Image (cartoon, rainbow, N blue to C red; front, side, top):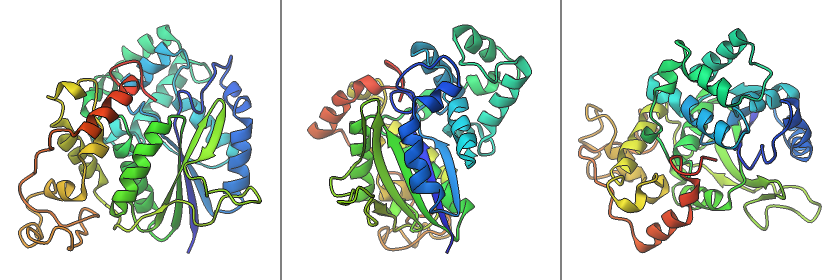
Length: 344
């Protein structure tokens, strides 16, 4: 079985912890991380793919954060990393899903426009982003509201990326690394997928790493051997089927989590990990699915080949009111809101 490695990388505070003077500076400021990727990915795998792990999942969010933090766009630096490593770059964004575009179409169109305007080698500033947002080709992309998928804990991003790559490489064994500087985000992801490994394709092992200006470590104390290598069994092994319609599932996640938007505790965004379950996702499957009625009493047991996790029932279950623990989690990560002080 071929082996594939995916590295989904956050940007603000992670791959970009300091402002470089040129795009090439991103490579210079991440030499240790890049050295790790070379030693632990390229030589051991048949294929390697870099993905955008930032919450900058639309051109609007990319421009907002790129202006606020003066880091520019995150897409070019991550693409440059893939070129430097001579590996694949997969530009799937949630905006592709919500706009009904082909995977990677948002970034592909963005890059083409940068070339036309002569901005392809520049760290973009406020004036550049303003110019791009008024471009007739890019206007539909900038018009997309981030409220459709604004999520603190990136569950929807990882779900889309894992199932997309598993669909692209159905016969491969995939190690999927997610890298972020925010421990609280990584902790939420770890707890969620440990609880629901059926939401990870059974061909994927998910590994989580914290990486920032002063830290680089896996999210488990026993993940590193005495020799300093990663333990072979590190990660969360998926038990689910590949979701060939992951786009619809991601939208269902937004619909389910969005029901909590009326609660003032969640006015600045929501945490999908608090209300997404395989059961609720199953109930958001298409009602015309032939297995819907038969599965209504066996949602935990009947596989759903059309949707990759469990067979659907018919009526969605509303998200519950948040518990005290949920409220504490929301308060704890308020500062990472896509509608507050920027996204990660």
